Image 1 (cartoon, rainbow over the protein chains, first blue to last red):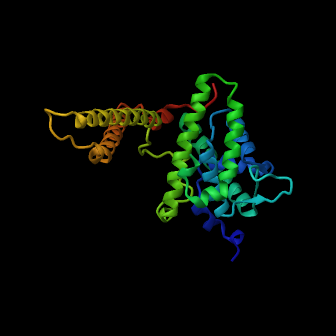
Image 2: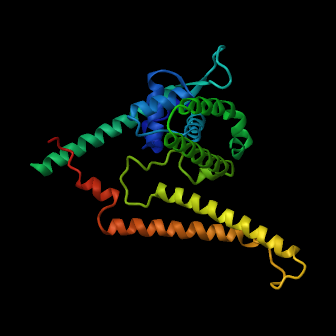
Image 3: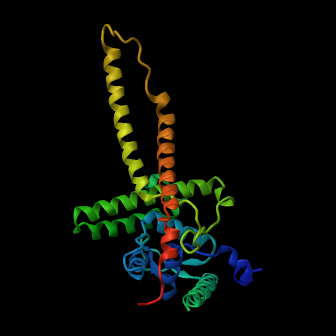
Length: 118
Length: 169
């Protein structure tokens, strides 16, 4: 069974995601990026609140590569120090699952709080 | 500091990490001293943490740790190690290492003395590891007690979140 054929239930064991991992996936969802670009995009998305170190970034990238949520892009013009990454179909599906989970949670939270305030 | 990582990780990501660090370093050159200190502290602690995690993984630790443990989106009343304590512990460790170095110098000079009234002085290496472990345990316990006090005073992160009103004013 291909990894991207896994059922949603099977993929749910990897959720919820940490904030750094979620932001990295969101960064790659927009377009393929190399490491420095991911760092700056994550910082921009979080308004400077989340600033990843090189060690944290590449620890997350290593895990995402091993789980086949992202893949490296082989570019002829890319030097060895500027390797680009992009989301795989499995990574995109997991990201959508996580966003769906968060939407459900925030919707439930707003309903409960509105009910309490009423 | 890349040498802290396992060889496999260095081969796989070493060049990229070096390139990214170089770009970040170039970006921080024009910033103030506080920003540069924050940058180097963040990078060094990130590398140390990442290297420890990779070594743990190489030893089969991934079987125990989840691949993506969550600590941000699930609100749980569990203890989180304060970052300020880690910085303080690093400073204390530096002081301890300096004190040990000074002690070794004094011990060497006394050993060289023709007639030492104190007698043979044992090297400090035998108590180094135990001393560092005791130091970390002490400050870990201090951080835990501090968090417990804040929790009892209902000023921990969970309580603050509970008191926050999401409704727009």
